[in-house]
Length: 257
Image (cartoon, rainbow, N blue to C red; front, side, top):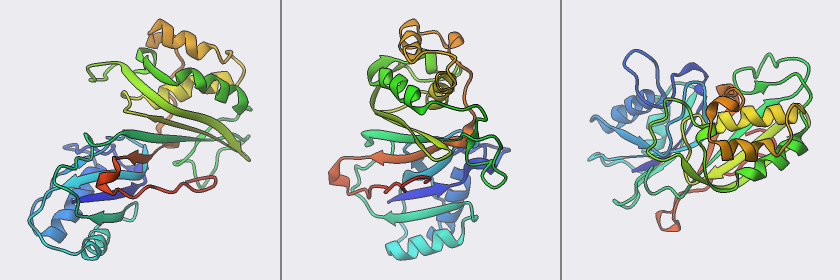
């Protein structure tokens, strides 16, 4: 079985189960197990960190329980907290794997670029009071395209065996007071997107030229890049799979979400 999960990550320690902290995986597995009447373990496409949100996280799980897609959907959502929801749930080919079948992952990062912090969306947007030049940020982002060693944007505790990743799409743009950054790659290093955004913000404020991104990639040194951007503006938006698995594509909104 496969499913798409949407969640507000602001009150969770991240996707992955933790012994003494609330996690999205724990809540999802509790709800699935309740409907299945048996213990359910899930595998996700990409484990998000504390405070990071998911618009279209894809999971898979095995079960002997026989339910219709509608019964699964209604039953699981009825057992989930209000800040987690299932978009769809359906049976897929046995060889489908939420993580290893994925071709690409897409993240978006939302920055509220105005003189005051939003009272309603402070857990869902990163605030930057200084004016950002999104055009410079977009120019800088193009240096990320292609396959590179992203050591300069890799968390110290990253456990990936290789720092190389293939970035296939990047764009930074503005919608009124929102500056939005979107990136698609085959996969990501720990904190990679937030570390990239931290450096793009420095460029957007005019403190560094766009070419600085190229220099950071070349030098492969995390200590010379900008600090990690906060987690609250980051969203896992979409996972692309081979057409044979018939995984529905997430439709982005015109501005936010």
